[in-house]
Length: 493
Ligand SMILES: Cc1cc2nc3c(=O)[nH]c(=O)nc-3n(C[C@H](O)[C@H](O)[C@H](O)COP(=O)(O)OP(=O)(O)OC[C@H]3O[C@@H](n4cnc5c(N)ncnc54)[C@H](O)[C@@H]3O)c2cc1C
Ligand code: SF4
Ligand code: SF4
Ligand code: SF4
Image: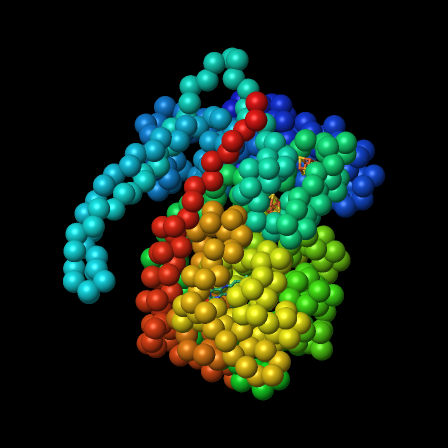
């Protein structure tokens, strides 16, 4: 067990003893037969998960003891005051809050900031800033820690973005997720709450990763588009990819390189289903199949439902929208500080302002553009317009605001434009036609993109040096951030 040094035995034993009574550990312990019968996790996996949960819960108890008696502090102050690995400490403080051991105290401060008005003149604007402090509660003997509901709660409150992660993680296969539905079989559910722990829409986790990024000296501050290593505008050099891609063909070129160089055995991406323009999550194992994944489908895809199928591969890459990237990131720290899907070597995130239900993609095509969906060759969002190109080569465009009212409601609870929690993020905002904006976020993502540059597979320029460039990415990120609605659960009693 990777526990802190200098911990006395009595303290450790007490914390381990408390951990055993945790609801999640009990549910998994009691559900062992059902879990093994279902077959998603082998006995070895099962023991590993249970051991890891026990370790993580013991550590939570130890951290809670260190928080006791401290005044209300923001996360950065807690990192300064409490001697502990910050990558464990920061997420644990939020988890303890969700379990009811720590209280979140919110203060709203008003600041005056100089901003440019429509005429370009500097004016004073009142900005509200939320300061969140955490303080361990003093609890009496009647205290019971919060039990995590299955994610039906997230879906029933209309917050579910249908990423599909919960259905892959459920140890007894009780969850079915499609692009617009989520069902839980209450007969087979063992109430372990694992789905709730990992769900990007259950309790917030973005601030945890942002604080950890802020404390990482190797990252630059990208303002509303979060921390990053490098930002480029880039275009593929492959004519084959240029034929089929959405913007600069960077996502397809990344997958091409990874598959060709055998840095991955497979990738999770999206293709058309039998209904054209309805996205279908797909596992691709070779370059020949890659080209059918290129291009943007604006209906949402429940891509993470197939993570399980991809378990048979040792090394995979996952392409997805920001909500999926957040789900993968959250699942890498909760509930056990160990990723369930430790074969994910690369996460490639797309920019995403909103997505549409498949029905509304049909409506956009037929009602707004008066074109049959099957005749449309390409859909695109660029320069504030929604653009469609049909098979006769005709192009039509409408102002984006004419289609945004058709976006999925759940997208209004999303603050992330640029896949802030992926290894590498790719989008069109900021770049010219035929080019993509590329933001490397982690060493893994940065090293990968350098291999594309050094292998002469892409043409690149600095995103800060082109127009509209990084400035526009940050500006639109800020707009998405400020418009984002807050998730507040209406818990049925
Ligand atoms: C729903 C949606 C909304 C978007 N909104 C914006 C936006 O507002 N601003 C912006 O700058 N960029 C947006 N993008 C990203 C943009 O459309 C391009 O995907 C990105 O610029 C990469 O271009 P490329 O040429 O490198 O990709 P390509 O090489 O063409 O590869 C595209 C990749 O996207 C994957 N993909 C396609 N559709 C989906 C889907 N529905 N869900 C998950 N993966 C998918 C494919 O599997 C493929 O791997 C959006 C993408 C999606 C899917
Ligand atoms: S994990 Fe994804 S699919 Fe599951 S409830 Fe949460 S948002 Fe919905
Ligand atoms: S539905 Fe959720 S709570 Fe129920 S068994 Fe599956 S993961 Fe556990
Ligand atoms: S706007 Fe957010 S929730 Fe909607 S598809 Fe894009 S990333 Fe997912």
